[in-house]
Length: 243
Image (cartoon, rainbow, N blue to C red; front, top):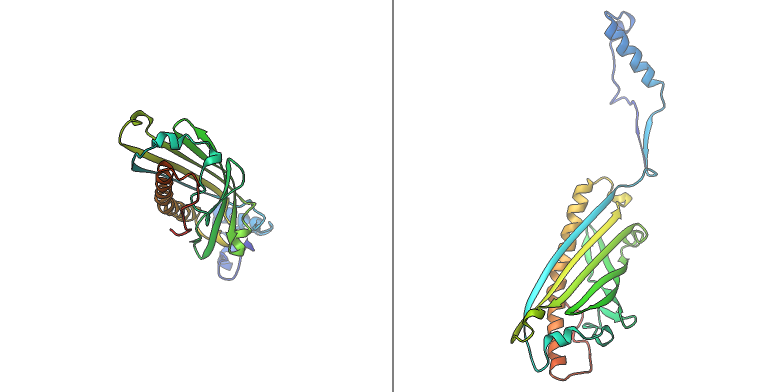
């Protein structure tokens, strides 16, 4: 798409002919001379080749649940090596290797387009929990969405921990602290919108994803702990893919 800033019948600035022929003062002559000088220059054009604007979406959320300890303590469960982790939901998560997992996020709408992010994440073990870091993200969905796969950067980190200071307490707190940031070239179809409006909408979408997913993730984690703590060593996923 090209847009020219040029003189047309609806936007041209006109001067009375008699004033052009007989300017009454020096300022009028200067204005007229300047106008014709500009008219001789090639029109300024804005094209699709111009470097596209970038939009940035940022969201964070912390979710905590109280967990009643069973026969085996929560801190012991949280200290398991990643190779012994359950995938929690086989419909949404698959194991790539001992520390790496592929996660299929729920489909959602951004403006009129359907998006399904596929995340590749790595789990890093920590003393009282773990840290989940995003390695890569691929977008599935509408054709215009798939076309953005080489035009955005994303980062995500989710720290899951339990309160190690109260390991002997009957009830402990389990916490998930997540942060997501996405930077994307504004697609051509969206360049008519202000970047601020796109960023506001994108941030709201990320907020909604975290609002839906973190409580569900924590619920699955608690159920998996309860199964493990009562002697179930199968590590079978308990999730069904539903929100």
